[in-house]
Length: 336
Image (tube, rainbow, N blue to C red):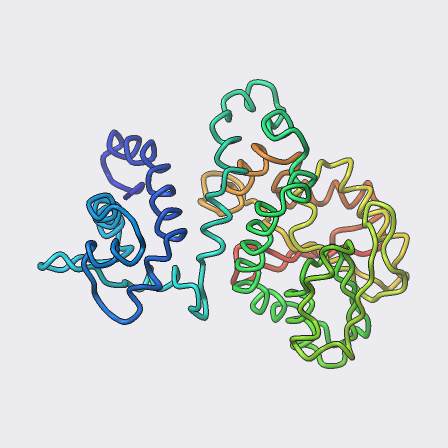
């Protein structure tokens, strides 16, 4: 799909068909096609026999994906991996399979179908569709929750290192990763700054899956159970909020930031790692994520000025925005 085609009519048609490409990627990822092609080209019939699928349907799926350079079909009808398809392999070093499965799961698809109603009312439909708010639903449905957390870990693993290396932690001794999940980001911070001791702060069921020990950092990183809506551990040089504030309304974000402000010493800093939406017509992943938030959560992606206002309400002052090699930026704040 070429959304940058010169023909504006075709551009609209291409965009309208976008959901088919997403569905095709999801099917290929669920079936594990890329894993079966790791050893070399194979026909759709051969793949279908091993996968237990209909061979003609599988061929039609792969033919579509090959047309956009996800897989390649040769003259004899055999399919092989392309550089893009390598990312669908389960064990690839930079695999995106779990991310694809997360982004194409029903928890996002179903609200997307009601986007026009969301725009009319200003309210996301998630509660009505699934009977609970987003994160409550993921706790209730273990399968969907696991799919979501695997996908988030997958995306985070690709971006954590470059983001952590974009900030100078050398003057810091103690850093708290607020809502840090399984610990991917704090692990990269500790690798980048050997003098730092970390605290991974999250809810009990999340910490149960923490990867700190596997990373060999148990002696430098404490696991702390708690709820960042109520409080955060006190006395750290920096509080990391990676992909946290974008999930929540301004009112809730101010509450979280005030908890961090209350806990940090006067020299402390808060580092918000989220997309910073650029002005105007500039293409940016944050603009895509912003509509995703609008469909499923009370949160949003924010501009620099919107972050500045949030910080001010929480007794903080925005000092700088550090752009990173990833789609996220580091927005730094100190006590006002």
